[in-house]
Length: 128
Image 1 (spheres, one colour):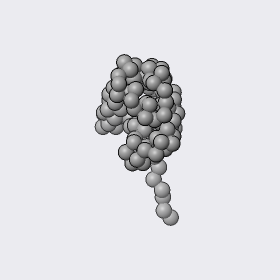
Image 2 (cartoon, rainbow, N blue to C red):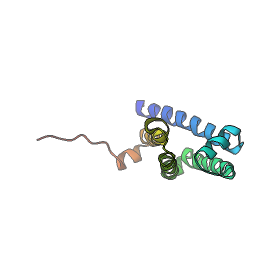
Image 3 (cartoon, helix red, strand yellow):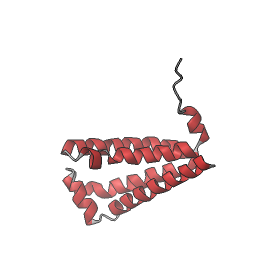
């Protein structure tokens, strides 16, 4: 039961963050437009990125498509890491932040889903 609740908490935290990020983009708030331009992208990509994020979040939150959603988010977040590396953003803060988000995504799913835990087990090494 503790694993289930840990997964729910992790999923809740990452969902709130991703929903906020997507909403800021869908509404084309100046914050999102300015940040996107600073990363070298045109302002016209902001709303489509926000819509994509909402679709990915929906896939992640529906139990039957959660793993697909997590896989697709992993690709999206990998692109974010590459973008931050390209512009020379600070490593531990901005550049690796999408990795932290991905860890919460997968961690929340892993703790909530016994089938995923059986496919991706955590094993202890046995010393002889």
